[in-house]
Length: 258
Length: 259
Image (cartoon, rainbow over all chains, first blue to last red; front, side):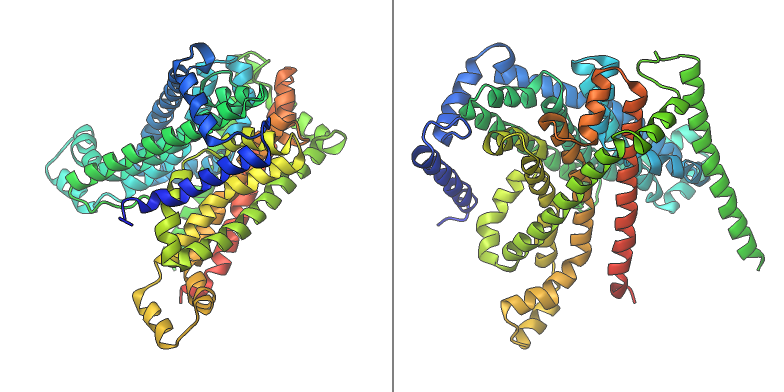
């Protein structure tokens, strides 16, 4: 068998097993549906309108996730830069960060619900909290790993702090920052879907919950598959972006270790 | 001597500054809540939060909820670790399995664990076992992938030693593969502890199983902000303690690797 086809064999086998089990073992079940029917349900959902429309729900999730990531990453980047540049500030903030960071992001879902009600704002605030911490920690590490010689050159050239930051530090940090951003993207998507499943009426997670509650296992499986596809596509795209940046910045394409 | 003294006084200064910043944040919370910068409905005072915390732990249901969540998290994590290492060793040790199965794992990995909750609800119902199953399944991935990676990354020299000694495949896995993969596995187990806590809380929220997740959701729905904050504080404490405990364990288990 040509190697290109090999990765597809195992998942196809699993799908066939599921198809057979759902058709013959538990026909007409409210809990599970054959994948072929899930595919048909997905086709119907593509052309549907309102909450069940694939495009609308996907857009809702992606907008919330990217707004949250934008906010969390921006704050994490700024604070990470500050703490990376000053050892004293870093050690002073250490305790507060270590106490606040382990709070599981989902614990803030009820609070966000209370403050913002349902909608975009509650979802993206939870995403922002979840992405802020890893971006903060990784930015701080990225600043520390800038070659000391580069900073000496900057000092010798008499650059102002602003010039030092924008012309020396940022370019040197860029490959590492993209690794951090890639981690942030995957966290943002997971948290956004989780918020929708737990509380927020909107997006892909909510659509999947509704499908389950209205005993439509075909539609539910279709959503599960679609959430997987969207996550995989976005992760693959950011990995490609990160590698091309790393290559262009003259560093070996470092594998991210999330 | 002097260097040692300045180093220790530097450390003491750092510790004091660290405490000062934390105290300043706490003071900011106190001030903001007393000045009502945000409505009392959202932001309770630190005193009220502390009181809810103590009352809930001593007389109320909070301690029971905490134990329930803790148990769910730990049990799910142990299951996830055991299954993850087992499956990971099976897949990692055989190059055939890697070729055929590993790409599927890469597809499943970015899937949010919570997205399996609806599926699990329809298969297993709104039960304690359902939440536990999703916690275990969701938290399994970091350990599984770390084990596969650790086994694949065994140094070529060690592989040659294994061939020269004519080690069987299982002997290779247990004597060389897994010990070498241990740093990866422990890092994966740490990540999976975080996932366990998150999925346990979400599971309690949507399946109405007794625990902190359900408690904070109910507190928010009935606008009892101080109880909500008490729950968040407890969850944060759980995350903090489990993480700290795991880094101690990690250091102890990996001592042999650093001469």
